[in-house]
Length: 201
Image 1 (spheres, rainbow, N blue to C red):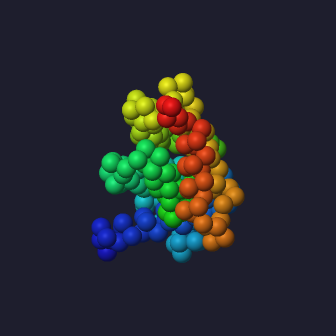
Image 2 (image 1 turned 60 degrees about the vertical axis):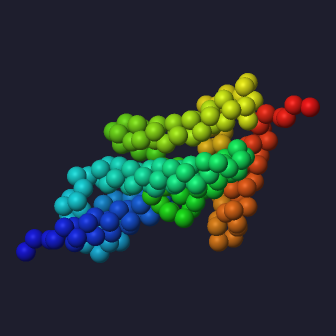
Image 3 (image 1 turned 180 degrees about the vertical axis):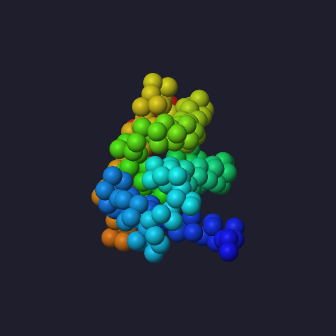
């Protein structure tokens, strides 16, 4: 008896869910297909029904994580299109942090596993990461062109600094012991104070 399409999708999702959790908590190199299969409750060989290799599985997880982040950015952009510049930046910081902490291993794996992932995986996912980063660059350049960010601010470098502040929180911030809204506000306020154009007097 062959599996239905719904069963195939469910089986694939269960594998990616468990693999994403293990990659995030134990590390990609330290996690074997046998570990993933045990967590799912299947034989290790069954994973090959859905994925060609562990690298292929990691790539699928990274792509799913980026889909979450891109969707969040687009939704936030639409919702804040007419908001004040500082509020727009703050909303995007909040949505990025929400993607990292509220969608768990799929997004946070980009922070913890990307740089140690096999070359083939990094090469395959870089265009998608570049697309997401370009959305941020476009936002900040728009604010600069509209006179809200100082002209001498290096947008590319500023975006990297902002990403560093947001992404590093994965290593130390615990939502159950902290407040994600307060963290987002703090990061956004510090960033905005550093780049904003002071009003003319």
